Length: 150
Ligand code: DQA
Image (tube, rainbow, N blue to C red):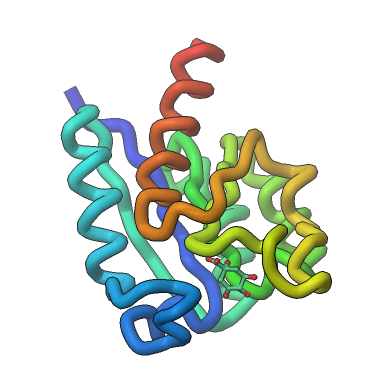
């Protein structure tokens, strides 16, 4: 049987994890985060395809084409675009597959401008504040909502 594929997409500045504001984001690199979520997916018979871009258009393209590219759902850390991007909101709506919003930090406990998520209304749920585990928990939430809708 072919494994179900999930897209794990990370946005701007997340390529700097490990050295970027370690007091906020910890010292694990994005590769570490990807390895953790890919292992968790494999244990559940799912393939996680992990990508990162600093460019909004890349994220819009990946998300919008997700179903056509064979993904059953998306785990998305849109970084700062979370708070600004109607284009990513629209792409999530257009993708035809469920998206879970994830964050390493807890944006609600930080600056006021992080308290608004532009993408949240297009997502099935959100996990924030648990570091790399947010990605794994987001994956579990996604798989559980996919199983419920079968
Ligand atoms: C973030 C939170 C965002 O507010 C911020 O702009 C990021 C990272 C997180 O994972 O905690 O780049 O998405």
